[in-house]
Amino acid sequence: MDMDVKRQYSLPNCTLILVGSSDDSVTDFSGEGVPILSVLNSAECRFVGVNTILQGGRIFFENLVKAVSAYAQEYLSGVHHPEDISQQQDRIHLEKAQNNLHRLIWQPGSDSHGEPVAIQLTTIQLFDLVEAVDQFFADSRTLPDLDLKLQPVSRRYRQPDEPLSQRLVPLTLGVSGLAVAALICYLIPIPEVRKPEPDTQSLPTQTQPTLPSSPLPGATSNPPNSQPQ
Image (cartoon, rainbow, N blue to C red; front, side):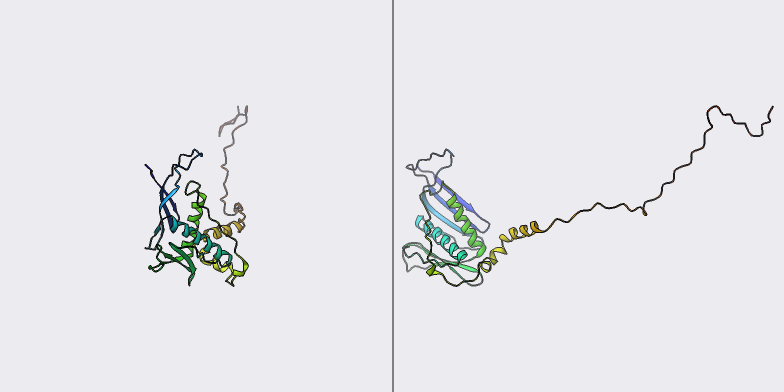
């Protein structure tokens, strides 16, 4: 009997959950003791502040990671990627919206006449999703047969776009702002610390007490009003 295997990749604004099972035909030689998730039953994608949950099977998940990776590459490079027209089921498309937002459109099922699901993502939410996908591909014990093959894009798809610095403004104002602030603090020279000099004028003058003079050894003193004999 196959046991359910769960993988969860959690980021501050996005959580990717995969549930499946281990295939007996997949041999594990690593000895790590962690079961391999080789058969995917369901995949969920949740965003903080978004009520809609994206959920589907293997085809949905494959289309999601391909669309997210291609759009992130397009967003950072400014080179437009042609849309994958081979998707016949659970189509997923990302496009740029206004005010530094990104629109993710999901066409559930195989019926192209169904009602599509569209959600708005901020740049922070988008790149948390990208990070979750990267963590999945770095996990060798989850769907090891799934390989993302990104083809280089011809420059004929190049379109004029805003500079990269402007595209990353909303990201810089978010989580990456911490890294920028740390870099600024690192570049600021450390001020020289000087030891305080004592103020001699403000220090009170200590007066040495006057000790009574003691007679020299062997010397005798005459008492007062004594007459010599």
